Length: 114
Length: 114
Image (cartoon, rainbow over all chains, first blue to last red; front, side, top):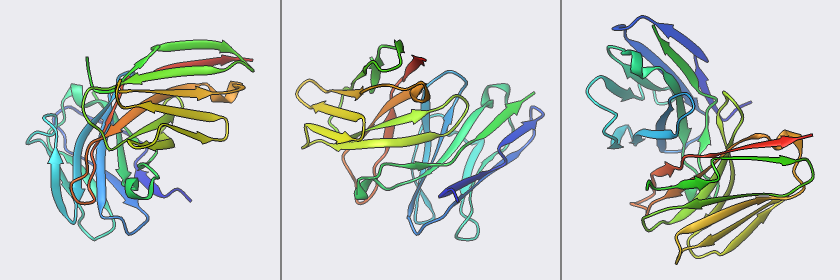
């Protein structure tokens, strides 16, 4: 069983629609992260989340993005009004750096905005 | 240049040969990590080396870190076709509490020809 599960694996949405990407990190870690990777490009940091609050966000993470941990287990990334350039793989990760384990990433959600 | 630049960008070798990938970075770090990504899939953590370490081994992987040159290398010995993937270095900045943001490099695409 994967330690970080992301759903859906692939989502196609119309431009302007809202999408919610979900992540279930199976652990008691406090630190969670969202990254994205536009096809063929580098993995970019979006936001880090600690103890139910945003601890850091990048310039990519503008007002159309939000993160929540609504029920203490699921960790969601919401994109309010999708644009074509939001098409990418979105990865959720939980921390493990203190234990020398690096991040544990989910398998990602491929978002296609049409 | 960006934090975490790998070279070469692409590498093609015969099965059985060794593969060496290099990573350079700009700022002070707490640790450096290497990840692997199969095409269209998530990132898998391979190895983490802390700033006070110079070399680390894990199976067929050998990682070196030279903090004076702000560079790291990943060596895969006796490569196999299954090693074909993209490899990313990622630097973790100095921790604030338990939190560390990881910044990914541009990646090296490795192809191992059977």
